[in-house]
Length: 547
Image (cartoon, helix red, strand yellow):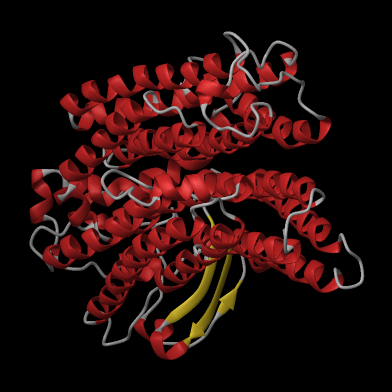
């Protein structure tokens, strides 16, 4: 398989090259951006097929010293935590760029810039998922947001300026808090490393912080990730952002970028700050539970189709949050599977919102829709599959994900699990309400029922095919993630037990991974074997690249 650097930067390279060639060939920009996205998707499929769950450590490792003085590595790797999220990213960006290609033919202004920004976003998201250095993760996390400020501000709806300002304020505050937490982690860990600063995740996990430091740094990272997901009550940017953002950008923003925050909890927070995660477990479970209930109630009471999808995402990410903070392998594995499932359903759902609007005189209000299935059985069937997957009907991969999440939460907090069941019921209300109001009942004035076009089918059918595939064979993702997820939550799970306070010789209350489970070697935050990097190596002596 090619280097992960090629995998990450191929989309941006194709977008920039297409923009340069578009000065001579008019359609070069959109076509080359799409070609790069498809090629990146092919590489992602290769990494998924090549990933060996038997050795669930870091694979296809690239580790090169980047900034020697700060101990920052350009370190990338595939793990059980990120292999399917990388695949999801490439699939949804390819679908969104295909849809944008068709839109560009209808006169999208500044198409070259649009496609360069989209490809930059894809490269940055892939970098955030694959980064195995804390500073590198923060850099990619911030970089992936920048294109969406411009995508919203230039190509957004009537309230795009207001939406962009709110998006900038919320995400900037969260990013600054995360940056402060990351710097503090590297500096505090250096006290145990002979004064050598390092940000490599495997090295930081071997240099645990005191319980007090973990707790306040945990809050900084949690704020950044909860804003990005979004979760109640840090979702204030979401209504304006969803309304203003162009659909092609919103497909990947909702389907992929929100998962980077949830992934950060699994890959960064739980392994590095297990005492903080254990201390604030109940708080995080309550945030997830309130997000489920609040998002579900607003979703089935709203009439704007975009915001129905938006608030349903708040509810689904609430399920993911409680799965992660069940702090046991079943809940966390269900959360990881649900990250993939949610991305697979919300992106085509948002594209369907665009198709519904085109058939309802430009309106996205479900009160002005109805009877759209009359002459469109194929369109209605595709929409029904997505709606049923959204409500996690038994037989779907979403059902498996939610089942594992609730199983994990049952073991952690019985009362929260029982209340969270209400979210499962309410999901069926808002998903079926959206489908029935749009596709059945009487045809509203100005609404026109027509079948889906081949172009629109080319965008939707591949994603729906993957939804059906995971419904039939969710084990593909579960088997490849099991070992990495268990390694990720192990330290936080141990921190929940009363005996944890006596396990560490260095810090009271700080669990030792090796003493907690002497039969299993300590592992890195993405499921990889813990590195034996010394302080001298982390300070910059040597670099390596290999598998």
